[in-house]
Length: 412
Image: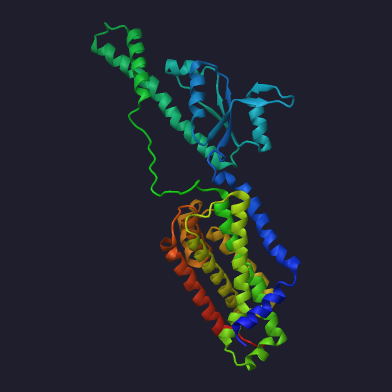
């Protein structure tokens, strides 16, 4: 008898319940699909644009120009009209915008008050009015930031015009025509704004291959790693049941080492995780067109390293608990904590720096996601993911070694 015969026997037992096996794959695929569509706005260009009702009570050329420029701002989707139940399209009103914000359909709206254009031309104080839900701080901060930047530009025009006219009049001893000076300054300013002296240029430091990022490239590997960790419940539970039934005591009589016994018992868990990940990635590729990168070998290598790490954590958990109830509670806490912290639920790029550092210290998820991103997002190869794979393999060896040393093969 060796480890492989033990593994083969356990695999046949595990796959005897086809209903449970089906749920093992079906539930994660449903979760991946729902999460990917729900969080698609984080990845798809334009899908995450902030929808902003905009009310123009001024109706002048100045306010229309302002609206046109706001509509060109990436990340904002201005709504200057709305559709009534009968299908009639109406200009956006303050009352309708307020109703949408109160219902939670929108978080912020922009109102351009009457007299806006006239006051700007006259150099008088005016401004935008922002209607907002203070609880939706992300969207309101974005909109207010855009408006404040634009308000600075609008404020600069009349101030510079006023200063320019005053300086020309002073230099000419009051003999110049202020109206003509004002017109010429405005015309010249308009020409200069066509080619402003300060621009914003974006340079890609990292190249994203293929069709770029999409929610499935985040969620398929992310939830694959999370559900791989959930095997600690089934695999660890099986080990504890074997101990309780005395199976290990009988196996220890046979000419097989303790390490071989554990390898045989853990091999079905490893193969199940590997099969799960294969199904998930195939599902994402065939059903949703998710790209698998340019290195199939690299993808297989990361999946294998994740499966080994998750399997090794199984024996580690089983070595430190006495009952399945303890295993269930502790494993659930560990899996949820590692998944939320390690980037399985959302990209680590959106969390604070200290959380990214902590994720790479105490989770396998962060290293796994780094490897998957290298393959799926950036089109990198085997050499590029070797550091992540090395860390995952080190975690596997340490977890298995500690688990083997601590695991008791009989009830105490």
